[in-house]
Length: 172
Image (tube, rainbow, N blue to C red):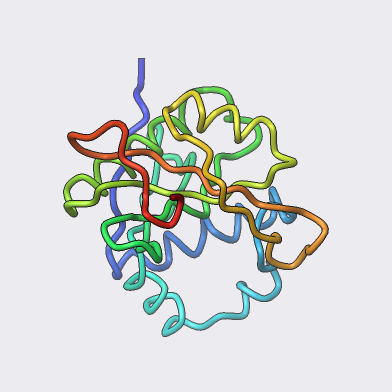
């Protein structure tokens, strides 16, 4: 039986990241703050710059791309931000998001981070439940969703390291 593997993409993998990002925008256009048309028009220089700004983690199964997530720097020192997670609709519920989240947590730990944060729509009960089951805790932070002021996002945090009770100072 094959196993899902997750690997970090390098700047030279920009075309691979572009392909899965555009696939994500086709499959779930309402899940992201930009559009397929907008991102399809970006040139190589843009995609290379994007690759340098954050870690891009790609999930694969038997050579097929089956998910992606990005990990960047959050506003709080020592905290990474998980964003842009996508798993194809026909692959959801198969443990791929768990593997991607696990890889993001390990990446944060290797960077010396104290926490991994994400923003999730309060309307997305499935995502809130998933991240809660992984160990993320809701914070008091809320913000309007980019591009839709009628939808609210919730910040969730996963402590990384030796202090399971750690919370970012912005949540105090």
